[in-house]
Image: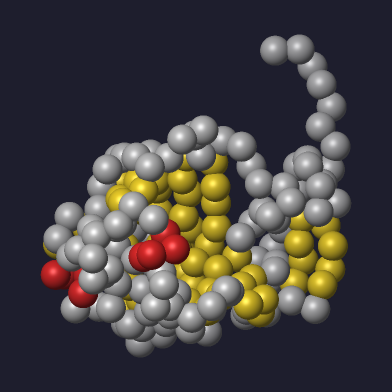
Length: 181
């Protein structure tokens, strides 16, 4: 590899936290970061902006309150990794329930059916990492285990809009406390 210089990314302060506004390397403290969320799926720190999405992988920190599902039970064709940074949650995986706590790591090879649901007495924060290939198939199967937690679709689909049709509208910006309290 030939030596190159990578510029520092521009960060912008907004009323809802700091957002990455250009390509490049950066340091971002979650206490200062922009977050968004909705009543069904909790809140999350995107760590990248819509204008500057990383080509190889996605990363965010998702914060769930007890009983909140991060998303619908699903499977993707690419691998994903998850690290519980704070609190407790349930991993619903392949029709099983697994309790998780701070520092538990979960590896999901492509095709693994899964979702996270907040548990315990307070918020849970999860670092979520996923590959971002040119093509990534996603499927939302019907799940009895996920349905008990409000995280299953009623009818299997490969279309996110169908899977989330009954969830509240778009996510809204918000400022989160870090670490979660």
